[in-house]
Picture: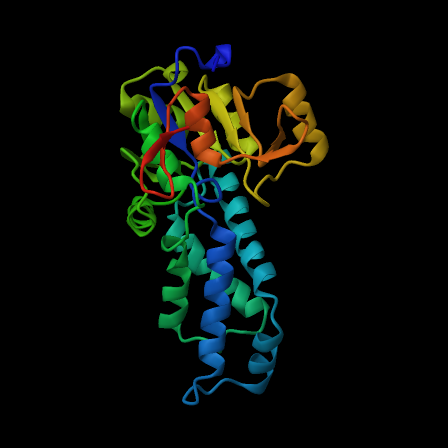
Length: 289
């Protein structure tokens, strides 16, 4: 397969966004909220006021999870823009914002402070996308595979272990005293690797992240994930037209026969970087893809 000229020579390091790109935060967080809500409501020893009990039972926890995520997006953008804002880790933000959201929803009595703190750490226990572990493993054969996430290092270590994600390096924005999309984060990671920006590619499911990395001289690999892109359709179309994304992996593309073909995230990235992937068949034998 002939590579996009922008990917020749291939990147020596791949820097991965994590939330949404490597892990399905929406599914994991929503399921944990539902599970912990049901556990609290079914616990006969819990004294939950009637209003809170009724509200919890009717709560749209998927919407709550999205609102929780939205507070994170606002938080990191503000610190990236204004370094005078007092520093908080992502763990601290997740805990503080969860308490605020529960207060707004009238659900402060649903869980104890200890339970709220444990629930705030659900972001350490996020399920990877199906292709993440195998895809990172394949890509690690030809390049350094590194997280470049706003998540703090302890969170990233836990996600790596929880999802069995074979990254070669873990980089966190906290190492550079800012958050993406600050240039300090992208260039800081490049510097840690002892490379030049052009030697590295950012891998993300968010065009805003990639645009910021591209402005720093990194190459850009877009891997579409369900529900993750924050840009509207007009902005997405403009990005495609402008051609600044070096490799674009959609969820589905048209095959040679005109039919839709489902792609496979990081595994598709690997094949398009020229990696021959061996996949076990039904009889256990290896077959090259």
